[in-house]
Image 1 (cartoon, helix red, strand yellow):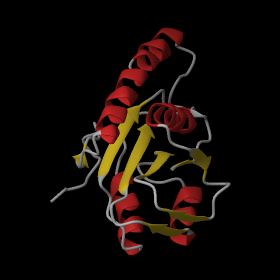
Image 2 (cartoon, rainbow, N blue to C red; image 1 turned 180 degrees about the vertical axis):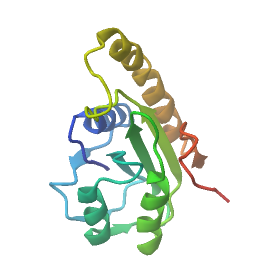
Image 3 (cartoon, helix red, strand yellow; image 1 turned 135 degrees about the horizontal axis):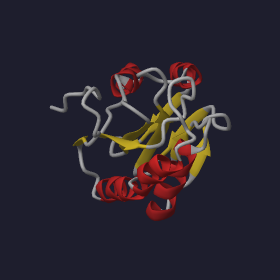
Length: 163
């Protein structure tokens, strides 16, 4: 199962690509309140807002009930424009509070859609960034299929130490 939140469709796009190639199901967090799965995978795909989780995701993670089997591979993918900030740390805290262990973290650099700062009228710059999205997603899918453990996020501020 892959759960996502997406305001601009970036995270939804990533979640759907992962689901297609891992033969998984994808759902918006707006549609799922409690998670009870015995599947091998549980993925979360969320955008980075101000170096952290969007408030709607933060509230969702505080309140959602998650029941998974002991061997479930739990992963998180952050979409971002400039940096993932500390989004991985926030996500990990939510899961730890639920007594769940995050197996892996990933990130995908996408076009930054925070329009007060970033100019989306430069079509060449946008195409250049978009051309790099699918290879990043494919690399993540390969890691997920192998159940790789660790921090594979590309952002320098994406803090998490895997033991």
